[in-house]
Image 1 (cartoon, protein in one colour):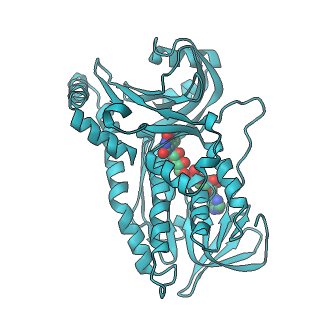
Image 2: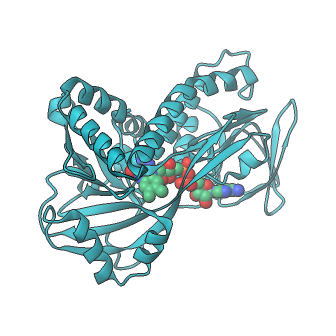
Image 3: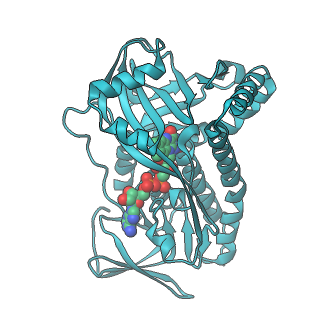
Length: 393
Ligand SMILES: Cc1cc2nc3c(=O)[nH]c(=O)nc-3n(C[C@H](O)[C@H](O)[C@H](O)COP(=O)(O)OP(=O)(O)OC[C@H]3O[C@@H](n4cnc5c(N)ncnc54)[C@H](O)[C@@H]3O)c2cc1C
């Protein structure tokens, strides 16, 4: 049911936030039979003449499997899905690291897909859920009692539910209504994203350069196109974002060298501030946090969305496996969810933050150590297999 409003309605769960994580959560919960309200905007259509969405994600095999279970993966336009079979990482000296799906004995390392493609498929699936009440509204107040949580919307309507799910991003409003403590360390970097037409085929390879404390990645898009993610120091990013398309393209070509030949920028660059954000509790009375509301990491490993979708899988499985006598907001259930997520989140934070710090260290000694480290990892097939299996999620 879409865009139906009532003055006061009761649900089992209210999902606040319509990024991919919130929409996937609403769909997953309705598919296990829950009556759900979703506060979210519908997917926006790309601007006229723009061929690719500038928000592009590397989806891991766990995310792919989850989207398949939701029957969203099957609805994606197959011509817009780019598999990644190889990954090449270049250090800031001569070191190079090569990961391949073949060596790791997996069908592919990841899939690259535009955010809007997945969001539109999620929207289409959500529209067919009779258990869902989808409201294009914002939450304004949250009151929690021992019986239920009540969310008041900006038009004064109220939604009562056993559980409120905060999927409202890094600056989560839901989280702010709880006493969760947030620690944020600004990376003093901006993630610049843009898409390019490539002069040479990408060969289904994701390529990444560590250079001067910055990380530049070119991810393969369907056809001879590539998606750039440049994690640049803030002042440098401001400079890059103020350039003409020709100047910006020349800067990217300076890094990518001969690998992709001449580039043409087909989606204008956009910047996103980067930070490491940790939250001490993923739960509060009748509240569970998922996605960037619960954790935010550096995008150098392309894992933030994958982590958020794994939150949704865990939460859904916990609620689906609940004892019949428990209510959905039972603190024992919520604690099970929180426990199930701690290790994965912690591991991903340590890995991405560690890599960022390693390549941010100035000086020739640090440079020598990290490039020797890359070369050493490159020479150890077992270590590479271990890294790939963890990155695949
Ligand atoms: C440059 C860059 C590249 C990245 N690349 C990758 C990648 O390749 N792979 C990967 O896995 N991850 C990647 N990430 C991480 C990924 O973008 C995030 O982890 C992911 O978008 C988080 O999704 P979310 O749904 O939790 O939050 P968001 O996408 O931030 O969505 C939150 C939603 O909540 C809504 N909202 C906020 N407040 C309210 C309110 N009060 N009421 C109702 N709605 C509200 C917002 O409008 C928004 O729609 C990248 C990040 C960056 C910056």
